[in-house]
Length: 145
Image (cartoon, rainbow, N blue to C red; front, side, top):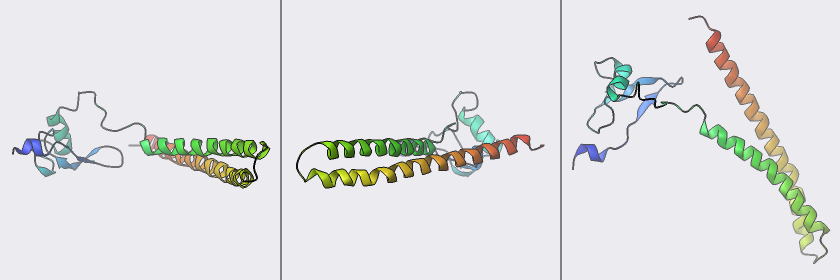
């Protein structure tokens, strides 16, 4: 079995700013490259040039953090779930029927404020996180180099 077919993934370490470190695959991912510090062609920058990724237009880093997007979706879902739970509770409590539906309505009515609080707390936390990221990026831009 050839080595090229047995290792289809290409991992390269990145630092906090998204720049490649000197560790990772020394070639463009053909499967025959060596792992370890960058080659003599100029470290990680040489590796990028060898891989042909410099001018290919491929983004080496996502501009949006998918985990933050997921947290925004969860926070919005919690707020919508709070209003949904409140609506369901009102329908259950206002519908004439058996006495079995009354505890379910009160259960929904009990969950609604906590869902709303969790969603609002999540949005506030995300806004503080974004403010911290914005401040950090502004400090990097204004720092004399």
